[in-house]
Amino acid sequence: MGALVVSCEDDGAQVEFPTERPRTLADDLDWNAIIAPGNDAERRKATSDRTTGTDDRDDAGQVTPPPVPPMSRREARALEAERARVAATDESPVPERPTDPPPAARDERPASPADAPIATRPEDLHPEVAALLTGELPTEPAATAAGGGSGADGTDDGDVTGGGGAAGGGGRGGRGGGGRASRPPREPRPKRRRGPLVAGLVIVAVVLAVGVGAYTFAAPKIQQLIAAISGAQEPDDYTGDGTSKVTITIKQGDIGENVAATLQRSGVVKDSKVFYKLLLASPDVQFQPGSYALKKQMSSKSALAALQDTKNRVQASIIIPEGTALADIEAGMVSKAGLTKQEVDAAAKDLSAYDLPSGVTTLEGWLFPATYPINPGWTAEQYFKSMVDTMKERLSAAGVKEADQERTIVFASLVQKEAGLAADYPKVARVFQNRLDQGMKLQSDATVAYGTGNTHTVTTTDAERADESNAYNTYVHEGLPPAPISNPGDIAIKAVTNEAPGKWLYFVTVNLETGETVFSNTYDEHLVAVKQFQAWLRAHPDYQ
Image 1 (cartoon, one colour):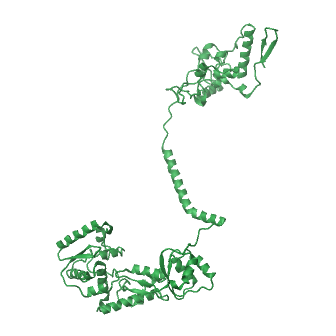
Image 2 (cartoon, rainbow, N blue to C red):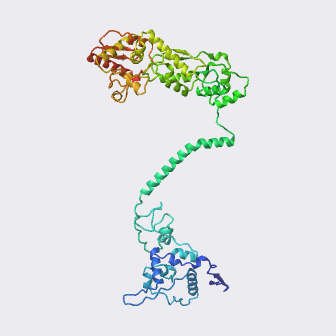
């Protein structure tokens, strides 16, 4: 370890200051190579050339001697200390290494860190290296020279390469330029392709969509699992005494499970199993066949108590208005008579049970509109048979022969849907009969609508009226529809058996609220009435 000796003028005492620190890993680093200009590729190339033994020759063909290995940090400090000692004792300057390359060699740009020049003077050292060796911070000009110019926000000034931010760091790795020429500017980076980015976004979107779908599917299962573990369960019973009114029927022979199923099907209780468990815990409870006025969304306890209260016992009925379609009658039987949809559907398809005329293909039209009391012991077939028998009685009372019953019902069902006021029924029947007699198409919107499955309105579209595949389309098919389109009442039956006299060929209802209808003999008269109806529709958009 070197030392710096200082003599005191007063007493001649000498004080020795060590000039070196204990050896560290940094002592073995080649600091001049680190700060040498050039990129990594150039350094690797030069190193590779020396390794393979390639000779460097000048223009005269002379072999250029290999460069002297650069001093390490330790050697540089020792040399600096020796020079300071010589200067203090006025000794002759310490000669440089005899192997140092000529000055011209130092001006050349080294090909690699191994070719970097050897620092023989303090001013040859990089300011930061000198600071490490001497412990002194570089002055402001030196610090400025070490870093490239830039703004305070850390962005480069102009095209200066190696510029850093306010801290003065520049170039790759944050190192300064070392006071030398700036490194060659890097080639412009190619524009990034957006394809991978878009593909990545699509993949993320798909993953998110799959995740949402998986959550939607799994969430209920997870909630059930959590509820099972924690003991918390979703309520399986309503609370309170219920909301809107509903009538249910307990049939003859129904047991507790049947009653529970009827209550759940009618919306009275939330879960039939809960009601049935409560019923099993009440062995003294007995049910009487009949209809009961209850409410929807009742607790099982409230529903059981209501069924035991005789005040809730009612005489329920199935009410069928004139013109009601078969599908609506079936729905009423399910909701009022305590029957299942499967039972009602099966009974409606078994036409052999009702002694209908040959050629009849449906119960539609044969169910006479009336009020039928609920009989707890009846099946769906028994209800239908009662309705069919009533229709036969009304046809007989109107003087309709058995052979004419089917045609009369088809004709009456058409009048029932098209006519408005009772006084117009015979006139409407006359219009259709006149058109049939003259070979004209009936052009009834009610038949077209029925063929599309719409049993509640009679308005149609141009496309529906042009649809030849609809067997009930009387705009394209001649004669009466193939089967009834509703269940007619007495007034319609009497209208087709006793039509009003007249030559009308057209009619249109011009006021849907009052039922006012205009009958016309000619098409021109009819167009005037149609305009009147259209004006009414524009004034009443709710009827569109």
